[in-house]
Image (cartoon, rainbow, N blue to C red; front, side, top):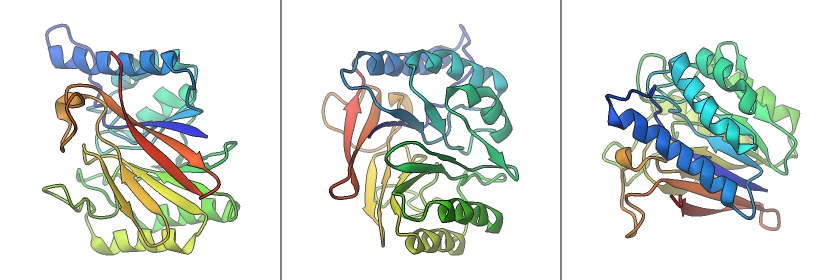
Length: 256
């Protein structure tokens, strides 16, 4: 199983008078073209949020028009700049995204590893959160397949990213602890895939690994990268290794 993960595309409705809006779309187009040239194509694309800048229907329409050329299912988590109803409606044809009790939480089945999109959006802040309703929905999904290797994908990491100036991006440490406690109680969870921090990072949690992917567009990326990577769109490829029950990750530059 091979997954391509992108994050924080921050797509803005194209405006000929604003070069930034055109550049963001061009970067997404370059990613789609790169995937199309790969000898071994991913089984799916996973986007860990901030798909758009303002959550407007027009912005999701731009994303749909570009990514529909992939011919590969694309699944989305909710970023702090996204709007759940608009994302679910605008991008449902790319892979399917469901709202449950107003939260974008859903499972992706039919692959070697089951995926679950977790909604970490704080409706009143840019940093992440969770709540009893979301944790209940997640727990119910996990109870459906207790023996199937499962990975969660979400926007905000519920752990410290120590290389960041603002390492902790949950509004309440107690809520993050409750989230991580639920993860540790479900041994089928093998990985947490996150975005939001605009940089690359990985951490070993109590019972699984977690990682953060850098932004696809270079203009809003943070962190240090090797020469030749700084000005190029970046994404991560995750290959599932069933022998060790882990994903093997490779940071990949887009060939423009």
